[in-house]
Image 1 (spheres, rainbow, N blue to C red):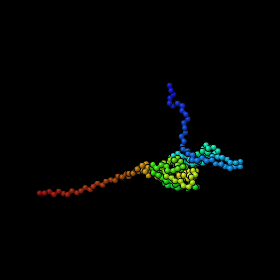
Image 2 (image 1 turned 60 degrees about the vertical axis):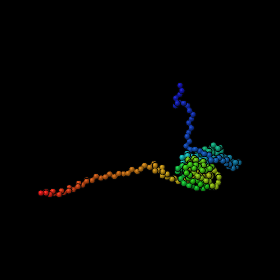
Image 3 (image 1 turned 180 degrees about the horizontal axis):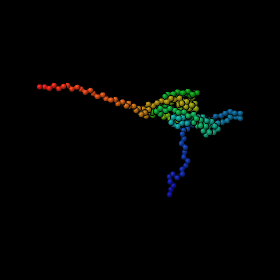
Image 4 (image 1 turned 30 degrees about the vertical axis):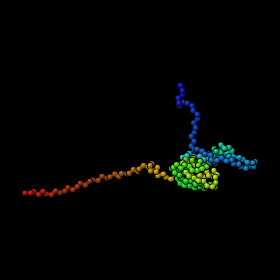
Length: 198
């Protein structure tokens, strides 16, 4: 006889990650010291839960894997909440960071993500499904990522009155209890005397 289903041995269960990670760029950076040059790697990483929460971090290490881990740890410490209004951003925003300038505008349903490079990655991880964007100035991915991160952090919330009207319950009317008062009896009407006819 076979073993019951609950006794079957299975492999270790995979941990469900809270945030999705996206490596924007990996660079080799050198530092000149007395004995020569020291080579290290710099990783730029963006994390997000696709539900309005994102983080951004940069890590350096002698190995690529170590740089990525450091960047993820920094990104988790710099999480921000992005207000999402009907699967897009609440309003237009334009941000300048160093030589990078980013313009983002809300888009209607079905438009998709009209963005490229680093902007697309960070917007997807934030959970935005429809957006229009344009980058001006430098093509540096790190600068564009920081500009996008700054822009999403400056967005203001907007109330969706359609959902609010559906969720709100109608207010209960307070019925005032009528105070019972003694009803005055009508006065008796005097009857006319009957005249007898001969």
